[in-house]
Amino acid sequence: MALNPNGIPLAGGMLRLNLIGDETTYAYPSIYLDETTRVSVGIGGQYQPRSGALRTGRNAYDDYIALAGDLFADIALAPRMEALLSVGGYRFDHGAGNAKTGHGMQGEIGYRWGPVEPQGNFDWFNSDTKKNSFLKVAGGLNLFLHGHHAKIQAEFASIIANASLTTTPALHQIVVQAQLLL
Image (tube, rainbow, N blue to C red):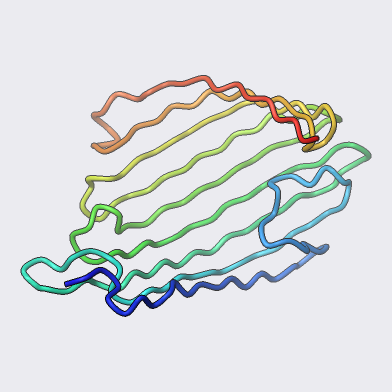
């Protein structure tokens, strides 16, 4: 009854279609800051046999499967101005009855004027069992002092976790962080 008894590694892959511009890295940086328009769509997935949830009443584990799709757009509008939109959906399957099995979405929208970018974002996961569901809605301001090498980010978020999204009080938080890459 061992988890992943044959030690088979997780297999995963991603296909990205660049509709406008190029993305040459594995993951996009949310906003490029280079006055170049990029629009792409992607799909991806992961699979690992017998590494999900322990089957109820059985002596075996379910397979783990994850599927995802996304749209990314970073549109250069004028010198030092760009609009950003990112949205994605996914499905995690750890097996029936597992709190980590469910559907989710994420999204981000922003607009940069010079070094300042107001932005909004959300993360949502709906667990099939409703024991691990959450919703995060946030908005904030990014200040790019020297691109991604030196920046300050401030965000206000409301988070509802692990219960009914209509009856559970939200956790509110303010996060301020600085990044410096030497």
